[in-house]
Amino acid sequence: MGRLTRKIMLTVAAAVMLGSAGTSAALAASTTNTGSTTNTASTTNTASVTRSALEAAASVPRCYPQDLSASLHGLEIGRGYHVGFILTLTNDGQRSCSLYGYPGLGLQDWNHHAVPSHTCWGSTWFDPDPGRQLIVLSPGETASASVAWTSGALRGGAVSAAYLVVTPPNDHGHLVVGPFSRSMEIPIYHGDLYVTAMARHTPHP
Image 1 (tube, rainbow, N blue to C red):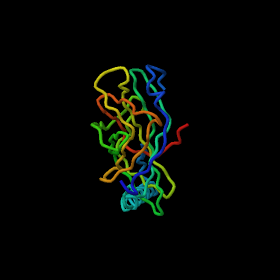
Image 2: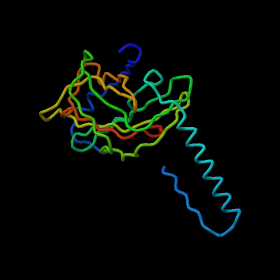
Image 3: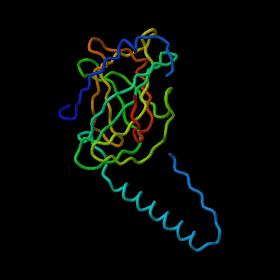
Image 4: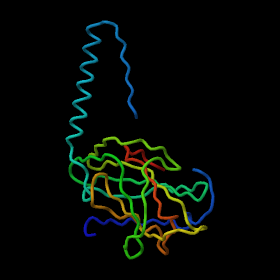
């Protein structure tokens, strides 16, 4: 995987093997028509500024894997053996870049061989889906998404995985996060992975 592969050690196997445990902007504007020329001009100027900002953001090139680092934070264990993390993508490059939409996900075993998986875009058991939005990351800034799966520890049909493969939105290259544990692969039910769209990151404890 060359320079696109970045490994971040995570020790989560013990928590993943636990059974049920605790569960863990849009901008709205309204304008009143008073018939005032001043108010009309103000509304027009605001709309013009907004359009200009959106056009400027849209002109920022997308983030490529070599611009980014990926990591997982904030392990959550929910009812029904659901496991959740916050996936972060940080701009480690020297220029601003943009993200729009959903990341691609995959799984690898200890030997970095792909194992069967399926990614579902939308809300997870832990966070609602914010929907697609254009995010411009200056150098050092971070975007995040909620990632979840169901542990297969106590049921059949699980695949065993050691690494999470992350493809930035609208790209084909990828980064590798993991291993999940220093000593074992973890069972993920049917290899099913759930992820929200990328959003402006709020630091997670």
